[in-house]
Image: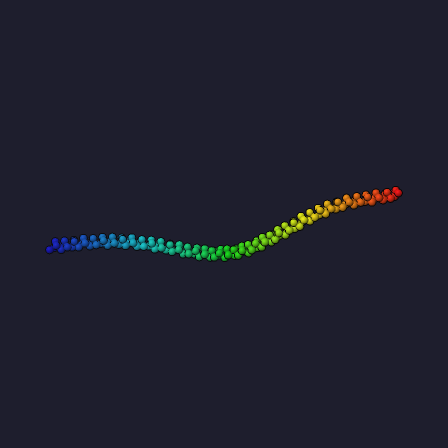
Length: 145
C-alpha cells in the first residue's frame, strides 16, 4: 500500500509540477500582455499628445484663416471700389476722346476756313495793288496834263 501511496504522491507531485509549469507559462503570457498593454498605453498617451497638438494647430490655423478671410473680403471690397473708379475713368476718357475729336474737327474746319480767307485776302490784295497802280497811273496822267 505504501507503494501505491508513493505512486499517488509522485503522480500528484508530477501533476503539481505540470500545473506550476502551466501557471508559469500563463504568468509569462500575462506579463507579456501587461508589457504590451503598458507599451500600448504609452503609445496611446503619445498619440493623445499629438492629437492635442494637432487640435491646437487646427485652432490656430482656423484663427489665421478667419483673419485671412476677413482680409480677403476687405480686399474684394477695395477691388470693387477700384473697379468702379476705373469704369468711371474709362467713361471720362471716352467723353474726353469725343470732345477731342469734336475739337479736332472744329480745328480742321477753322484751318480750312483760314486757308480760304487767306486765299481771298491774297486776291483782294492783288486787286487793291492793281487799283492802287491804276489810281496812281491816273493821278500821274492828270498831273502831267
